[in-house]
Every structure is written in structure tokens, then in C-alpha cells.
Amino acid sequence: MNKRNFVAASVGLAGLWTAATTSSHAAPPAKTSTSPALLTISGAISQPNRGALDATIDQMMGKHGIQFDKAHALDAAALQRMPAVTIKPTLEYDSKPHTLKGPLLTTVLAAAGVAAGSPVQLVLRAVDGYNVTISMADVQAYRMIVATHIDGQPMALGGLGPQWAVYDADVLPAFKDKPVKERFGLCPWGLYHIEVKKA
Image (cartoon, rainbow, N blue to C red; front, side, top):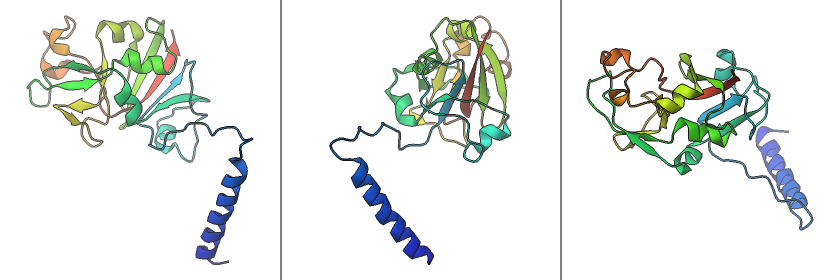
């Protein structure tokens, strides 16, 4: 069978399968996102929405040594639906203040069933493999956000995005008196995975 006939036959069978499984007696299909996941949360979570790491599909996570049997995946729309917070820190890249907007990291974690105030450690991992470990207590104290926008524009992959775990270092006693280039060591840009570890 040539490739085009095989594809046509497959499409036809898929149509028959859809018709057979969408009768009035069938259960409604589960809601799944048609958009790619931008942030995955695994570990000590209670509200997973995806299964185990797939060694074929989840290549970057596999190369970074990430393993899980369940996780919570968020796409851009899910992050945009969360209440946003705006901060205006001075950034190390040009020593100028910039407007960053996104949900609190605690709000993002709550979507995966991780309660604010939980005695957990969080491993925040960026697309380049950079990762930091921070306590939930510090995340709350620093009011860290998962920034999705900078100066009114969505953050792009290849820049600081699509997400950046960040705080307003200009107003935090632990950071405000440090040189600008030393303020953001706990803030991985290009954030794509969070592992929640019980303390």
C-alpha cells in the first residue's frame, strides 16, 4: 500500500472510530489541551493532569535527568487565566527597570495541588539545564512570580521566556543592596519544569 492510500485509509478508520465512540451512550471525551505544555510540575503534587515521563516525547526532560510517574502540565492559556501580578525590578542585562507580569509562583503550584505554606523544596529548571533549589517559604517571602510578559510583550523562547521565575529584587532586603548582577541567581529564565520535593 502506498503512503497516500495508507493515510487515506487511516483517516477513514479514524472517522469510523470517532462515530462509534461518540454515540449517545458513550462517555464525553476528556478535556485535553490542544496547545503545547510550557511548564510541567512534578513530584509531591496531588492534582496531576498527565502521566509519566515519555522517554521518546519528553526528550529535553530526559536529557536533564528528570523522571516522574505523574505531573501537571500547563499551557500558555492556563497560565494566562491565572490572576497576574506586576513587578518592576531593575534587570542585570541593561541595569534598567522593566515591567514583568505573570501569576504568583504559589498560584501556579496550587494548580498542581501544592498548597502555599507546604514544607517543600522546589527545583526550578530552565531550558538550558540551569536549575536552583528554593524553599516554598522563600518563594512566598519573595513573592516570586512566573513572568510571562516583559514590558507588555509575551516573553519568547530564545529570550527570557516563555516563563521566568523571578522576584522584584529592588524591594527585597535580601537582594536590594547587592550589585544588580548578583540579585537573580535564584531566578531561572526559560523556566520549563518544577520539581516539588518534600522537605
